[in-house]
Length: 610
Image: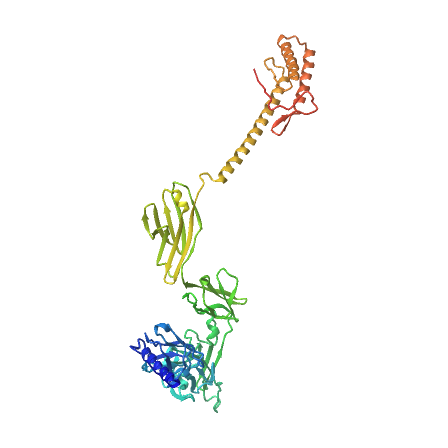
């Protein structure tokens, strides 16, 4: 019975393996690839419908079973396992990954074509022996040797002077112990007649990993022999001794033709800092050369101009900015509008950029006590759109209303749409609704205009949505009914009316007081046609004053006053006038001085002229 069970399990296992491999075929197989060391690479392998074990083979050795390959931390099997995807992903390719790879389906007894992964290695930075300044005596030839090591394939070396390639160099290559990388050595010979002091000679090394190459340079400094004048014996008063001498001035190895004589005067600039000035003196007995660098102080000058960048969201952004200056300068990278220093190096690296990283960046160089300069670049981040809008807009009932949304998007939005209830409108007019889109320097402004606003519009939720190739964004906006007369206006009108009332009452009171005093003074003139009438709330006091006034008026009209009586009456009137001058204005009414007990508060003084 036990042997029968084992036999059944074996038959079942074979059956399952056979079924797993039925109709299996490779939809994708690994291909030969060439990759530079340090970069990632993916070898494809896809077997739709196959659900058995898949093995990756490297140079005949199995890497392991499963998605994570133990013992190979840089290796992983990626893709949709359910769809039969078993791609081999290698992070940061190394020279040890230079091999032949196969993908095998075990139960289906299938193996892919072998794929060769070729790893290229760029050479190390080239080095010229004796650099960066090579000195030699005048008249000696020049021999330069340049090394470019650890390259796969071996580096090619060329020599350059004044933009031209120099021929005649010799080369040698040495294979390293790993059997793959090589060192390259090149030697250049230049005769003494073909070299000048101050010249720059470049060694450039390149291979398939760095087609543009890497380079270094040296500057030639020729040490001239001293001029020695040897005198031959000559007879007194019998032979003439003649010796001639000529000077040649040069700057940076180039002859200055317009200068002759033993003095060279020039207004220096920054070029004298890197291009030495030399004077060569020649006579039939020999020559000598003196070369000097001029220590010129100059402000920042751009050596490598940074370029604006446009990168995807989450990627790195790298700016390169190089300046020269003397004395030594300081470089500062900052974002425009921010006081934060991002870097003091030539290179500014922004890791995994976000939308808020977009903007203007400034590379600023400062030479102490000499000057400063800066260069601005832009960083544009490709990502989903972002929408900004006031969440509530106002509009009056029965009139036209608008709601707006502003879209910032790089790349520009492919589509902008307004939606509410069952309606979607991207542009143009539909019934009472019109959509207008305007592009600006900072983004896109989309406006939804509604004519003849109805109450239902204030209950509707409006969506502004924008799309681009990276995603989308939506903003919800509501419309609120606007009051016909704003509360602020009502308050303003009420306050204005109250102030106007106070000013008016004050003006009336002042006017009345002025006329009162003017007419009271008129009584003193004792003109027969003037009558003074004072209105009181105290009726008894008013009646007494009224009788008193009537009596005075009657006596004046009849001429019954004698001169002495008239003078006495005038004195009485003057005393009354003084009493009236005690009137004071308080709390909107006229107040008589309380020392005049028979007078009380009244709201007006009536003066009439008959």
